[in-house]
Image (cartoon, rainbow, N blue to C red):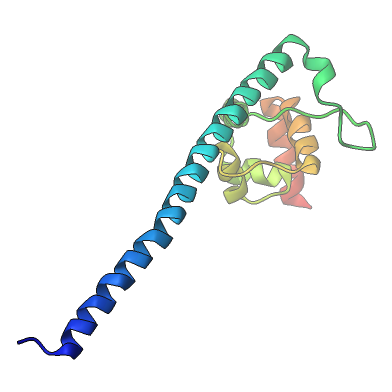
Length: 146
């Protein structure tokens, strides 16, 4: 004959599981609803981003006004363009860095698209774009002598 204490213990465990199941069922349903809502919102964001991209292509001048208060023209930067110019000038990353007043590692990171130059550095890059091979070598000699 079973002990009353063991029967009482088994019944308490059964009732506790039943209560726990009832409580967690609501949480499971809420979590599933939240996941569904998140996926819906992600789809809407992706759709809106596509619309913005499409509108930017149609009217590129109107979409993004300049954030600078100075009204300075923004210089475009291309990692491939910088690497191409450096190779055309026959310069190493260290020499290009010396012309731009940055380290060779910085030039490498720009070309590898690990980082982007700041606005002041973009001006220096634009100045180097207009240099030829002889001018670049002469400028490097000036920097070495000073």
